[in-house]
Amino acid sequence: TPVLIELNVCGLFKEKDKVDSAMKYFNRLFVIVPVGSGFCIVNEMLTIMLATPEQVKKVAKLKEVAAATAVIPAGPTTSTAVALPVEPDLATKHQMVATLSLKSGMNLVWSEKCLTETNWNFDQALSAFLQLQKAGSIPAEAFQK
Image (cartoon, rainbow, N blue to C red):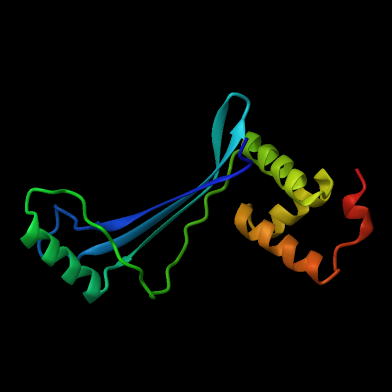
């Protein structure tokens, strides 16, 4: 069974209610883990920014080719985005701690400490663990169950 699913959805949109509104790019990232017989979103990040001129040109070209379609592919962007952190509920935090403990081999106390220090961002916590482990900076007590 998978321990972690990462789903990334991105695209372009224009606000209908605003006259002359600029085209915007969005990127929504979900981190999903198995819980019981279902799944739980343990982390979510939404980024919205102005679309690049290159992305707007692609949309115009797509509209010319297929005016009836509603699918608008988005290209990569180099703009810096501001992430909106989402504080997970208590049950989700427990699941995140258990999953990090399973993936890292650390005990629950140290797994929770790692997640707390990365503002409950699972990807950042796992990345921080891997970097600190590679540097040999994690004490042996973190792995005592």
